[in-house]
Length: 119
Image (cartoon, rainbow, N blue to C red; front, side, top):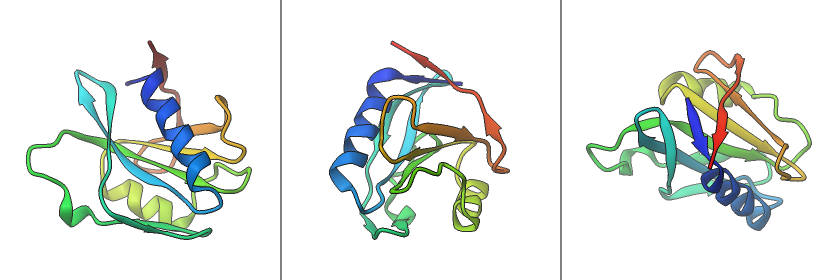
């Protein structure tokens, strides 16, 4: 699986703009390349973000999720693990201070995995 650098940068900028609240979006694309963020209505606070999955349009290829932690920890919480197990196979957590290297990727079991960033 790969992710476009521009998509990752867009998520990092959204994280900075939402701080100290969490941000969440969905990951989509084609041919195992994530090239799109899907924004659905969501509620957020300093401690969580709840996305309204019932508003997902039909026919969207959903690879997973991306959300932030307004702390320096990218470790998934129990709520994150529940989300990971339900939606997609790739889940990215971007953590404070939201730099180019302040993120980690996980599979649906919450195990850290590598994902290639491409231009």
